[in-house]
Image (cartoon, rainbow, N blue to C red; front, top):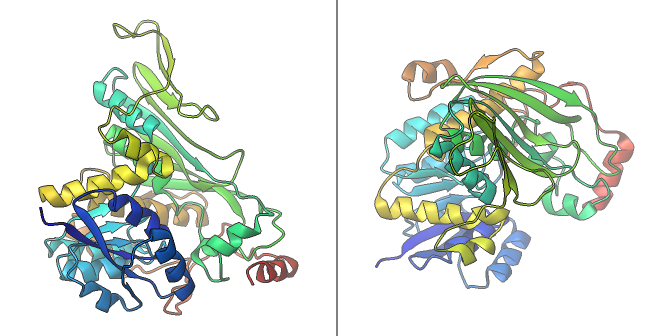
Length: 413
């Protein structure tokens, strides 16, 4: 069987994905693209194979590639995906698909002219407890789903200078300007996957509480944004982007007419499935506390993979889509990806406008596309030198102190 030739753009997170794709017998990583020489050197050493590294993306694309993994900066995937579409190269895109609303329009228009498969590389739905959540929802015993919660909570140790050096290694890095609604897929995608719902309206409110970090240039003083979503099936979701409150956890809860399912904070992979006493299904109890199992032929590979096994499963899903010649299912398809990006972008506008709700456009509809085709508002600096056009924090004049900035520059030397 001919191997799928894959290129990796970005040798930070991209190495994780490359390692998981290489576990599949019919996949071969044949090229990397990275313009940071130090990162490229470290990536090749870690990958352990002599694979060519290109600085120029266009030259990288000329390497007879079947597929490309986009693991470059969080908000800059769209132009590179479009270059892939023009060559009918398949795309696995890490995190959000588009950094602006206009890019969402451009991404889908280009995709629809191509023969490419597009998949969002979102791994959290494939964690063990979230796979169990989907299984329970699909089983129907919860009844009609009315409400769900998703929290991705990731506080950072203020004294962890290694985090700064590894993840925020220059002052205009996107993490320094990341609004709290933007890192949305870890909290939202598992709920969309389990329930099948699609957000149609978003509103969000911030929790402004600058962290007492000793070394930072973060322009975002919000600790979290609490995001409310009205969905196409009548349900309501409450999610965070990347929260910085309480203790570190990934927490999900789904409530139906007859019962509810949740993974338990601080309890590893244990889940609780509960029913009302008059709705208990045959063979179950009113309260069911247990740890789910993988029940998967690749269990050993999954258990050794990052992000709770999700990294390997996503790589396998992408391979399967290419082999089968099909687009991925909701919420991994391009329309779901752009919907989640729209939640991130318009959710932040809600934060900046006192919680004002915004309708989430369906970019399958060209009328919606025309409304947003020139909307390039962004809180980020671009690698092309472009500057932010909107504030990244709910308190729009917030800025870290001169002492914090000085400590930051010392830390990243």
